[in-house]
Image (cartoon, rainbow, N blue to C red; front, side, top):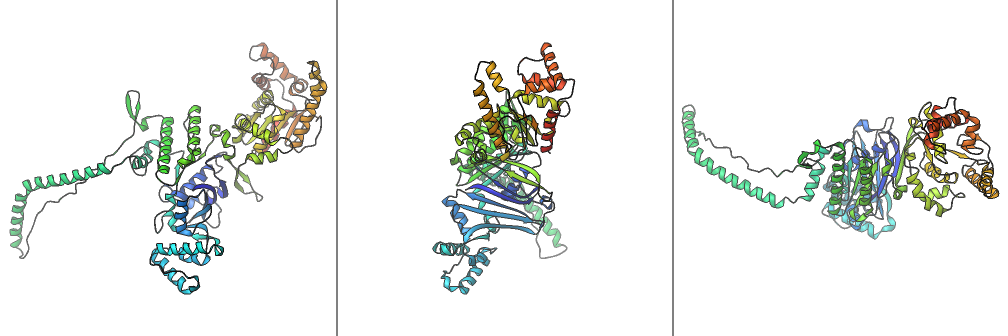
Length: 624
């Protein structure tokens, strides 16, 4: 079974969040948006009482009632999953929904399943005796059901399941109490089917490398090291030590203790009669301690402890150990292990971060290994072409009442194609999607707002103008060069789908025909191409469609009548002067050179044109 969807209510900042999961799920978004809260809520759901517990402080501020609830939907159920879950709640179909809630008065656990309504009270019984009694009452009150007698709780479960299997038309989807799923009044059934291993950003590798049962290394050793023969030999050693201890004890103490006992008895007899005193040795239990293991790191000629290594290596060791644990746990039985890692890029240089991403992806994609992977990351290294529809972007937005709420967005190829209908053919989207997603947008997906421009010089001018006052990055704004006007709609559609506010700046290319003719090309062909592209992008932006739009700045986009250079020459001659000066001083390069344009924009004597300043103001506004 694999986790497919999670609904979380009233946990920390999450009021009512729903997140879909795949083999690899990438959670992104600004700090404080709720990514880590999802992982910690799941840690409580699966491991509450072992590695995670809740307090009143974990309940969302303002929640009424003060109750945390989480429901997890699982798919890809195997026959073994059906058997284990069916014993508890008559689970059927290709999915199952399991829930857990917490409040100060206690916890509740349930499962959604197709069941016969009259059986709910029997299944809700807290113990075996109560279950048998409720079943007896059911058979007495409803003899028409023809239920057989049952002398044990297991027999009751089997009888109910058999009846439901024979009467499928009478079943209803119901929420059935099911405490045994999480270990109450019986074995924790869920832990035998699905394991959740959470690696928090503050998990310490040196502590997790100790040989104790609760540590990662301890859990790996428990599975990887067979202690059976060693334990038998150590037990034999204990018995031998006990025998030798008795020999030494008898040789040195028996005579002395007998003498002392007699003298004490005689002394007591002078005061009271009828009692004898006996002094005997206390015999200890000889149990040799089990063999303990330690993890050492061969670093050149020296063997060092884990805590003597750098943070990057410790993090690498920790995640590698978890990977090994997940593989061995999944392979040891019919269950899936979900590795949930908070900030996998922590302490890793770029090459190592990319390696982590590739290794984790390979691990999850080989489904026979039984591993799912989820990470909450701020790094573009964990965005991959294959993972376009695996991204879940978190933001905090005000709802209609003005309250701040966590919003989770995702998208798919089909949704992007739908948004681009009329401007891109589906085959064009498929061909260009990976390149745009990886080559143009990794940093933009983490931004509060994005400016999409045609080329590097447009990007340089906007960044340079902003640096005269306040860098765009300080406001969470990224300028993205998409490589041409016709390339704007696809990245814009992806960003809109994922809820990243985007602003478009493009050229109207009014003089494109003249430039083509000056180069000896076809004026008519160039003008037709410009008209087609202008009308296409304006149609996509849902703006007034014009063949030659004038220079204008709107709330969603800006357009220059022709191109950037003629505009700057006419509206900001001081920038032209500074650009030429930089080139003469050897601080810049001629032609369309982005760094030269940026530096000239920073150093130009006069303020930039109002149009450029207005573009930046508009983008700062949509970035909040």
